[in-house]
Structure formats: C-alpha cells, structure tokens
Image (cartoon, rainbow, N blue to C red; front, side):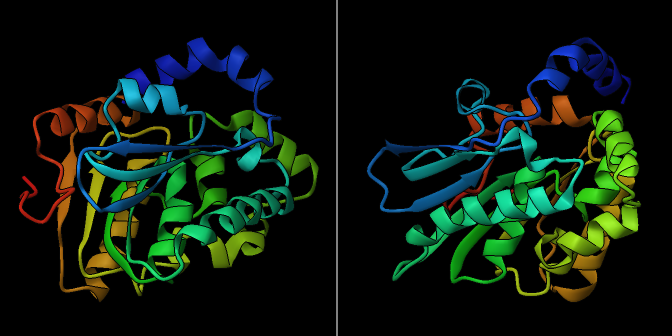
Length: 244
C-alpha cells in the first residue's frame, strides 16, 4: 500500500538512528477479573505505549507485553538469534505449570509461532505474520539499509535465513494450537502481502481450522483496524466472542 512507503519515507532518518538498540522492555498489566494469562509480542519499533493507545492488547487478564529490541532486525542474523533467545529465556518463566494465551503482531510472530508451537497454549492470535525474517528484510520497504549492510557482511537472503531457520514462522507452524486466529494484510509493504499469504496457505494445507481474516489494507492501517475491531469487541480474546 502506498501509505506504508510514504510513512516509511518520513520516519526513515529517525528509524535508522534507533535501530542499534538491543534492549527489550516488558510490562505486566492486570485488567478486569479474568484469570487468563496473555503473553504478547509487539512488532518492530512498536512501543508498549503505542500498543495501548491503538488498543492492540487483550481486554482482560494478566497481560505480559514484550517490546522487541529494535536490533532484532539486524544486519547480522547471529545477533538476531542472540536477542531472540535472550527474550525467550525471560518468557519461559510464564510457561511453567499453566496454560497461557499468545498474541503476536508483525515481527513479534517469530516469538509467537515459536512458543505457540512448543507449549500448551490455549489460544493463539497472530496479526500480520511473515514466513522468514531474511526474506522480509530483503523485500520490505522498511529495511533496505539493513539489507545492504547485511550484503556487505557477505550474507544473501538464503544464508541469512539458514542461520535463523529453527526460529522462523515457516518452521514453526505445524504444531500451532487448534484455537488459532490469523489476520492477514493484503496490501502490506512492510511484511509483503504475498509472503503473508504464502505462509497462511501453508498453514491452511496442514490444519483443518481456518480462522483467518483478511484486511484489504497496508501494514500501518491494519494495526489501526485491528485496534478498531478490538474497540468493537470483535477480537476473540474469549471463546464466547466470534471472529468476524
């Protein structure tokens, strides 16, 4: 969608300067009277405060929100892997002796798919997932500079994704919980829509459930629309809600 490229153009200089940050942030929020536990992974450069303002988070329960380190999208996939496991090692404490739910948005789907396919997750909600980080970096309107720096380190897209293979969504969809919901953007230039659709088509081939919604929007507006659906109680945080 043209707006994704336009938005990226205006934030590019600021975005490039902040991409070296290796710090992730966690916040635990208690809302309502629900006993549900939600582990939430936000997208690249999406802050917890922005997620709250856009109403992207679950309605109730114990909500554990992770803001990804910007440098997770890195010119060196070994750094990406190190940061991935650093965050994952913290998440593991919430996966012991209890069933949890997982929400992942955009880049956060690397963690979401990885955890939802390996643990006893009750419900998984995935928003704008892409198959591989390297493929995303090589094709996204938001990561041209990172791609060029990675090439200077002698990485091709294939070599990059080989380093991260076991962590990527395309490797971690076979054992997702039956109670999974997917939201796919059809006009996305950040996580190219053809790659989102490619991933969801693989999922559809291997799972009988097909709880999939398609947004005819780009990356930025899909986040806004997901927040609007949440405001309208259209997101199935609880089983009584229907996906529409």
